[in-house]
Length: 76
Image 1 (cartoon, rainbow, N blue to C red):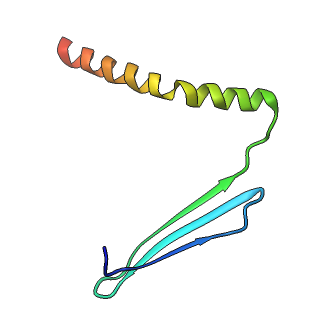
Image 2 (cartoon, helix red, strand yellow; image 1 turned 30 degrees about the vertical axis):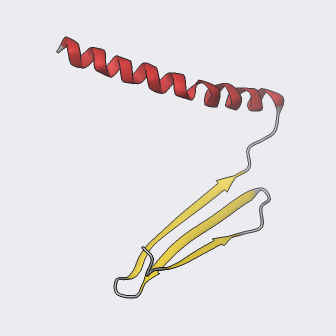
């Protein structure tokens, strides 16, 4: 909304990362607040490889899930 006053706050990145986005609307008051709290993952090579494979395969998992649901829909 163009009337809202947007505020974005982020802490100094390190082991933890905190980001907050809030909007105060002149008529509606506090419209919403969204907060993200993230923690740094360990950087061992095995862990990094596991995460890389997980995220690399995510589009494939979504497509397989879509076709699986379509097959179930057609069969019923």
